[in-house]
Length: 93
Image (cartoon, rainbow, N blue to C red; front, top):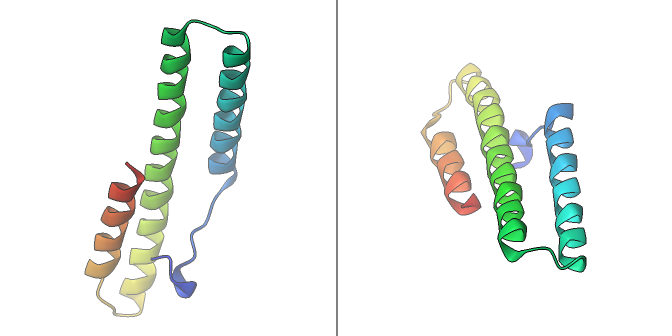
């Protein structure tokens, strides 16, 4: 799936999600500099991590669908693509 012929595509929504995560991380840095309560900091860390996990899953699912369609059009086997997508998701956790 991530071979040369199966480059991942990232639309504006994905890019915007990552910009929001970047804002969350900067907010976390400010919270730490301001010595905010550790429970609040950890809660925000968890929210940022969850946002990254959801974005990773979205990227894989969107691109898996496209890759499967392309592979089927070529008459190829999609089992390897599906297995690779599963491995990407497992590694992201």
